[in-house]
Length: 321
Ligand code: NAD
Ligand code: UDP
Image 1: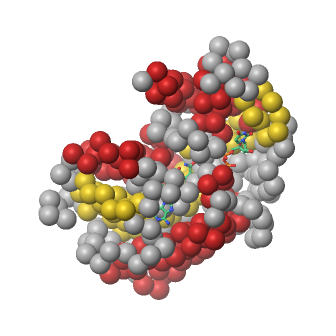
Image 2 (image 1 turned 90 degrees about the vertical axis):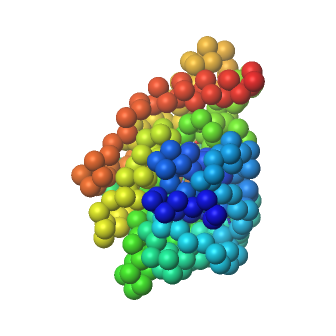
């Protein structure tokens, strides 16, 4: 950390080469922070942060958070984003996903304790499972299958929340827990299987849009800039405010509606095909964001149609470039 500035925060972004991580690293650099991006490139890529390497306040370390962390790290802020977020990826090696969620959180929390750093856990709306309460408030404890295909992620993230809360209570670590709802935008990997990027890439390739089940299941989709703003406000929130806090857009759409909107952007020529619904796919999902509104003064600013158009244009631009 030879270029470290004393007048700024030193942010360790675990999972910083992923979709949200790369946006976050850019934002923190813009704020003048020193940023250490730590990533094993499982779903993220060196290319995602390559442009940042020219900045003397940016450092990239290839490392898996399931292994003990490098000893020389001295962060003041720790962002734990290190975990594949797409079902396609987190189900490929479920045991490693579990280890990333739980062992990874433990290693980073230990570092936070040692350095007196703030720690933000990127949790997920998946802690609510297939919810029986709608919309989901932070008080709701969820309906999660502990032994299904999604469990490595859902239960791993729940365990990481538990660890974070216990390190706060028992060891005095200043912890913040963000329950992130589905987020989309420029920078998503085209092949990661998530609904928005998949539909857009299919439409641009002139392929049918693959709707799982009857497409009646819903998701509430947040544009990435709004999410990064929410995460940033949470990290800098009042000392002792731990959450968990829902961060997401309350606009709720069925998967079929999402497909129709992407079709419209692609001039309507693409067809829709129906494929089997994966097991345990949540039927509904919508955040109650009252807590974030009151405590962080945060609410999403980008409506779905605007965010979807920006994302579509970004993918279309990449195709041409
Ligand atoms: P992503 O898959 O694009 O990024 C995850 C990053 O973590 C990648 O760069 C990956 O290489 C890295 N990583 C994975 N396992 C690792 C390990 N063991 N050690 C080091 N690095 C590792 O996902 P994303 O959308 O950027 O999500 C970031 C975080 O936010 C994740 O923790 C995810 O669970 C959470 N989250 C995201 C969403 C969303 O919609 N994007 C929703 C809920 C929660
Ligand atoms: N989905 C779909 N077709 C796809 C990809 C996803 O119908 O090609 C559906 C998926 O079944 C789920 C929703 O879109 O109901 C959101 O899926 P995603 O993987 O983006 O996120 P998650 O299920 O983790 O919320």
